Structures are given as C-alpha cells and as structure tokens.
Image 1 (cartoon, rainbow, N blue to C red):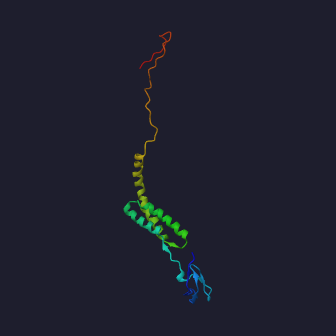
Image 2 (cartoon, helix red, strand yellow):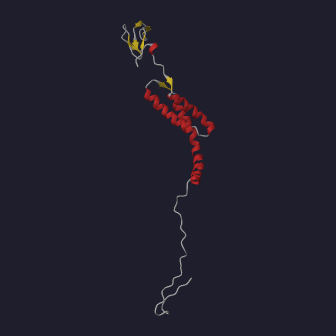
Image 3 (cartoon, helix red, strand yellow):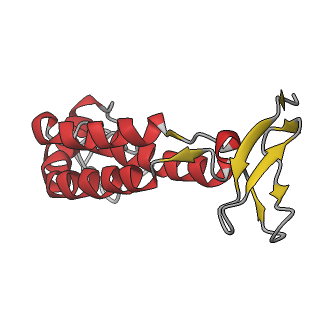
Length: 162
C-alpha cells in the first residue's frame, strides 16, 4: 500500500535551508538542492512502537517474585520471541532492552527454584506414572515331588517325596 503525502516545507538537517517538498511517498528520502544531503523529512519519519511481547516479558519477570517462578519461564520465552520479532521488523519496533531485562530477571528469579521444582516434581511423576516395570512372577518351590515310574526292580529306583 503506497501512501502519498501532500507538499510540505521542511528544513535540511545539515545546511538548515528551507525546502518545499512536492508530493512524496511515505519512507522516501529527499535530497537537498543546496548541499546534496539525503534525508527523510521529520513529518515522514516512521513512528516506532514498543513491542508488546517485550513489555509482557518484563511484567511476567517481575511477577515471578510473587509467583515463585511460575511466570519466570514464560517471561524468558516471551523475551526471546520479542527479540526475534524486533530483529525481523528492522526498525518498526523498539523495546529490545525491555526484552533483555525480562529474560535476565526471569532467569535470575527462576533458577533458584529449579531444585525445588525437581524435588517436588520427580516424586509426583513417579506417583502418577503407572507401574510399567517387569512384574515378578511367583516361582513354585524349588524341590517338587518327583515320582518316577516304578521300574522292574523297585529297590534301585529313586523315590523323592516332599
């Protein structure tokens, strides 16, 4: 979408000469006729907004003081996503420092709780997990009664009884 703006008067930032600019598209540069300096007029400057993910990351990181690290991990994830978004939008968003603060504060407040969560989580997972181990089978007694067929000579045949 191309936006066409009406003629304006602006000053060259280098030589301070007043310039009348005809119709121009948003984001286009102007070249000063006097000093040949290339610039974007002030009234065409792009307004950068703060990344909402960066703000949310910082809020969640600070909230992890009260939430015992439940919001610290999401603060780290949102901070990383905010930094990626800010980098991809190339100048349209700001808030990189907010995102970094959210990551750092979220990590500092979450790391001390990792042993606590492991100490609570491992027994809980073992309790909830169904027993999938090898089940022991009861073996009958080791010395069963063995009787053999009576041979022709009963005196020579072994006879075992329990």
